[in-house]
Image (cartoon, rainbow, N blue to C red; front, top):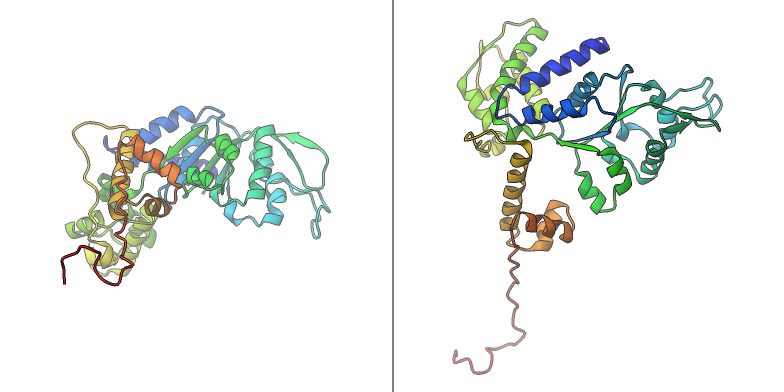
Length: 349
């Protein structure tokens, strides 16, 4: 698919996701539309399969930049080849390099470089990337010449970078450099109103791709999908539906055709507040408070245990609890008496 067509396809998919007035993607797209024409970096966080690269495509398409959209998976670049892959290398810079290698930064000049899974970068590579982002200049491996590049940076990760910063696993200065605009893509289980539409679209797309008639969808399939948490989000939903279309001989798809794990179907999708249109911040704030409240209950108020489960330091978790007006009620386990018999004065025999 040509680049222009791919960007148009990405834009149309995101617009279909935002048709509901209660969909958090509507608010996300509104913010992305304001950020797109600026030169500032954007950090996209969200679980696997939530559409981070799709949104990055959309931002580039609305940026007005004349260059290309160049994606790179940071976790797939071996550390010894990192500099050459991103910044380029002169012929002979390392064994086997017979011609100059321009690198991905040069390929993205006047365009967008999408750094996917940036949370996977080891510390030494984070330092090298930070230097380039600070100076706006690159130096090819084996060269002494520094070249200024006009490149817009978009980054994405399925991890919580603030948590990694707190744990000293990600550089704070790099985090602040790439997160001038910070967007959190909500998981599919928090957008149940989008699930029926996504299923219909996936059914039609899979049937067309396979040259099959488009099957009907039984209500039981929608019911099962709404009670499944979709850990792989949109990607998992589309693959599950495609498999159902290809493997089912019936003209109607039912719940059993999705082959969802039975042990996970008991978790209902969260109820939506339809009383008013709510901002993405309000939705995420409520979700975070609900998570923290449940975390305290499951850890029986033990702050240390709750912090380990959440992947946060005690200080960070306590700060979040204070923000939400929650207090850990630490319960000390009763200590066993070291005496062999009852304490003095105990009338028990």
